[in-house]
Image (cartoon, rainbow, N blue to C red; front, side, top):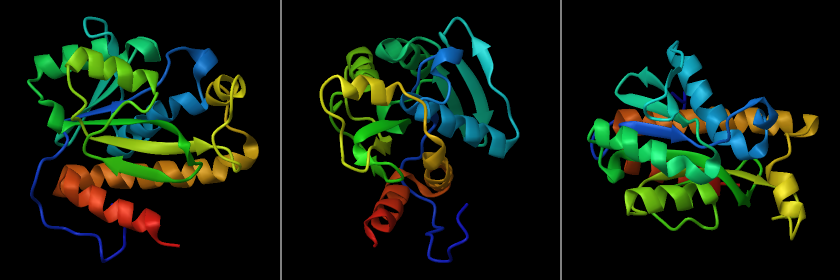
Length: 206
């Protein structure tokens, strides 16, 4: 957890029971910007000293951390919802107790934003989840991958999203992943709304 003494400690409110990192399977997509959701849940697993196990019946990899299950769909991004639906139904997790972590090309690299619900915003992984779950009322943590000049336009967008992080982006990436794991761990401890209010406010500070 963050060491800042101002981090709220009181428990209360909905807490995530199923934490999903979105990405594409396979070595060709490892370390690409579109796989930042995978990177975040991998770090959460590492911090808890656990490993992912492939569950072919659910088309995904799962790992158990205190109070929650981590999930990485092994389908490609556009079919992520099928895996999430199967796991959430098996464990009887309502959409309000999900937390999906994914890349956001409209946020600058290094910035993140937590929301309790919202549209897909053009993200194919979220589109698939909304179709499969029949709802967009699930919490999400968006991690910025935009260039310094903003969202890439036209054909450059696909190349940027599926491209690997450059060496000069690695430090900012590592800091963002650490903040993301702090946000998730606070959500598990004190509730999603508490984590959202605290970390969104921190993001707005200069």
